[in-house]
Image (cartoon, helix red, strand yellow):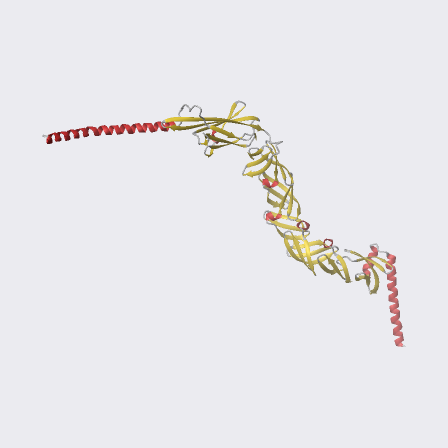
Length: 469
């Protein structure tokens, strides 16, 4: 009896299980559908559908911008958003610029995320914007879920600034150029502007100070800021490239390694060493300098050409572009010609404090600051300019000498001076009569010469007669 009851109980249990399985499956399926719907609800809630904000709770929004800005300037607005003292990234941020009570520009497209809760809004003020007071209004929205309940937090802020149409009067100084953006320091702070937007043009150069004219006023700058680079030289004609365009000019002087270029805007100075300059030719007083952008011709004095040493006829020469070696070819009056491997140059004897220190026959010795030179008296243009009795005055390229006529052999007169004896031909002295030499003095000398000759001949004849007797 009990076995039968147990069998009946098992059959009932199996029937219940067969009936309950579909019900459990349906329950699980319904629960899954509800969970999916709840997730979808949460996702749509995060998209910030309108939900009443929590009373007394809002976002803290702060805006920072300069007090004065200028047409063409790139203004940077910074926005900081916080909730309960903690910076947060919001779900929506809108920014609008207003002027004179009306919307001037929507600047949402310029918003950049910098860090948690921090945003940057760079905006270029149009060059034709009207001066006056502008205001930026920023609205922020942040959404969260409290369990399954969505909560929305809002915040707003306003910041105004003054727009000036001109930089004039604000002591604008260009301090840096980044690509095409100018960084300008003014009395009210540092600003940034696009050089293209403000049509910046150089109008004057005064030594190292450049004056720049723009659509919004005058800007000053150190010449190094505009990066002047000499890009072309043809003779003395130059082309100079700057951040604000090209400038044409002429080389007007070279002092040491500094080239001065005169333009219609003023003078610009460039260092020769920046152009890989090499001295390639010297032609008397003209030097040719080769650079990586063209050749320059200038006076040798401009490259500080100096003879530093003389040994006999050999010379050592220094310039700002390197040293040279040469040999003395000729001396004509006070100009000495020196031959080097790049050409001949001429140097004034006065530049080396040349002094005539000795004369021996037709050889003159010249003492200088850098050595001793020996040359022909003809090279220093030694000439008898006057004769008084037996006293003669001799002029040279290095000064006058006074001497006494000692002897005459044939047509050669020997004159003694304080620094030695010099020989002068009589023909040369006769020539001087035509050039203004005192003919009476010359006549006396010639008469004396005649008497000496007669006496010499008479003595010779007397000796012959005595020998004959």
